[in-house]
Image 1 (cartoon, helix red, strand yellow):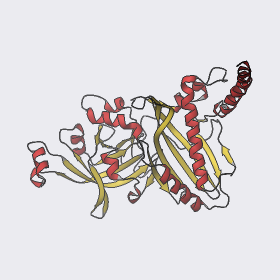
Image 2 (cartoon, rainbow, N blue to C red):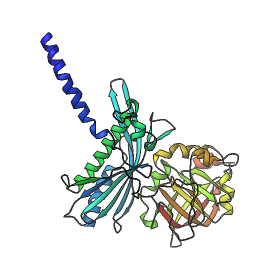
Image 3 (cartoon, rainbow, N blue to C red):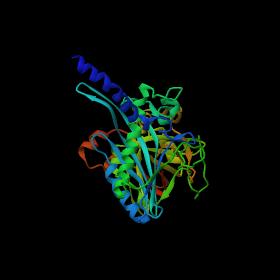
Image 4 (cartoon, rainbow, N blue to C red):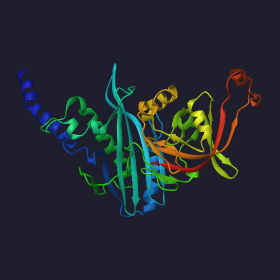
Length: 387
């Protein structure tokens, strides 16, 4: 017994040392900050590949990696082969402990950007937030949670216990994502350069100001313009499951409402959107009087904001502020929100109230008998903006 105890005591310091070595990659500087934002940056070298080859390989990997599966949600939100750029959104679980009667996990949301050039690919993981518990309404931003200042003691020699698990799992996730991208290029052993903390490096802009204006035809800060026929994603899922905001009005008066009815199409040889608004909604009159409007789409991170906008009226409260949304002004002069991953600007072409006599389905006729009918708005797509 004593012999076994001595063996354990002799081996214990080795265990502690190994544990400290294992945590070394999570210590000072492991979470890079760029201009006050947490930005994990990496360069993948693939010297024998062209820009197009790298782009095709990364896009194929991203389409497999970022998809909805087993409670996780993801998508390739933007891709432009000519520019060599790809942007993806991830929303998935990070598991801290999984025991028989206890499951400790959080939802992590993030954006992953790629810029492909001949022989290399620059990768960024940013816009990281957490939901913990996973059904919480309060999002924890990485900048306020896992940085050296937030996650380490004053001497920066140890991780703070309650925060350490978020920092460790985030770093592990970023490492896993980068390894997946590397392997897609056959570049498992390629030299890698990782960005360290700096205050001068420029990153893709993220809207944090109250309002940003642009003249018609100008670019929209923080977004890229794409053609309507390049709109990404499954519009049926994006509406029925993810929802959107219809925002009518201008700087003088505007209001958003959550909607799940609508679609995309082609009318009079123009790319169009169509949506439906009930006359009882505060947005209805603003939409009816105006010329332009926006349809905006969001990641799962902003589910609560959309839910709030769907259950509260802007007639008697500042629901934009209450929902935590940041208004911006589009080139057409309409209003949108910087939290959206995609903004579709529209100009009204046709509006028509749906008459109950035009409903052939008997169940729907019964359901809507005696009720105010929706008005359908069809709008020409002026611009499509994606982050």
